[in-house]
Image 1 (spheres, rainbow, N blue to C red):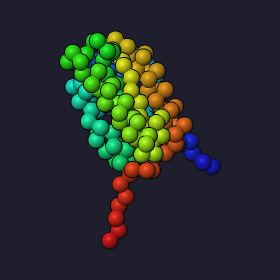
Image 2 (image 1 turned 45 degrees about the vertical axis):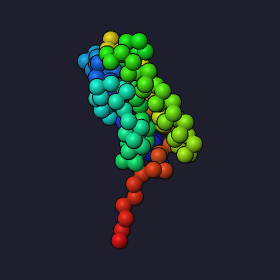
Image 3 (image 1 turned 90 degrees about the vertical axis):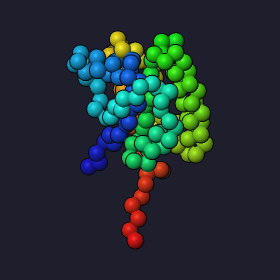
Image 4 (image 1 turned 30 degrees about the vertical axis):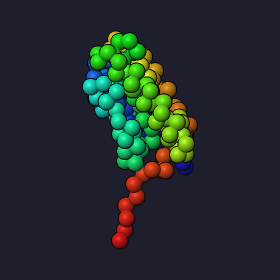
Length: 143
């Protein structure tokens, strides 16, 4: 019997909107896959591209970056910087052979708990379709 693949996903969530949206989904008792491990960042612009590569190296099968809707950023233009950085990183990782379905970005406001649930479900399905990530994982050396 083969088990169905359950991906590990790291989510970098903006403190002011997406993290609050995730909290609302939880307090509203919305059911969504438990595959996502949330990391709170002050702004989606704070997500360094090396965080994404490091997450993949450490065993994540996918990454989600979620921030405030464009125009609603607590730091004025942070989500515009994040979107630009995401597009560049997405293309770079695709060029390096990483399936583009593994790296996802979304906008979720603090009042959108149901939207957060949908984003998580979509991300899990996309990463499941991509399969397990083995490309960048650090290998333990046996000397």
